[in-house]
Image 1 (cartoon, rainbow, N blue to C red):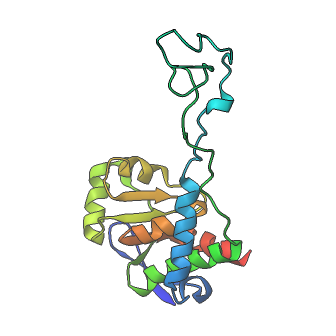
Image 2 (cartoon, helix red, strand yellow):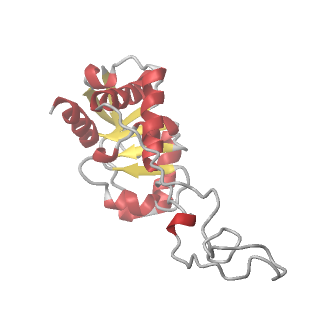
Length: 207
């Protein structure tokens, strides 16, 4: 699959051949759903257990007479009705994550990349260099490229000038190639890759 390569100011910069094994896979909703679900659940922090009656260290000595005191017949300060007592029906420790086969995760990423290429929302740029790291300059470039909510993926590391210029622009998300993931790719309206990002992503599956 051949795609046109552009510069950040929407000028032509040649062509690039994309590997069909990475960018030409037929997307499957069930695979993408499984990977996105796994990814979002991995983000959730585990639930912390509360201290219940058996976890609280307080006296178990009966502190009042059984009869004649005019109060309830308490025998344990660990009861939930007392300040400092155990929590009644408290939250239990719980981990929300689950395992997903590496091959399924890799296939999901290929399908996410392929889905963007298939619907025409994949753009390849020569580089992300922004003159002097100016936000105003980058906003003008994005207008020329007709990009609003977009995910930008660079090579080994993100471009410093682009990161500086895009820090305050709503809808622009920047990641290195190693951080490419299914959720962020599908969430974005457009996927923008550099030549270096394409090389890294293809090498990621061929290595």
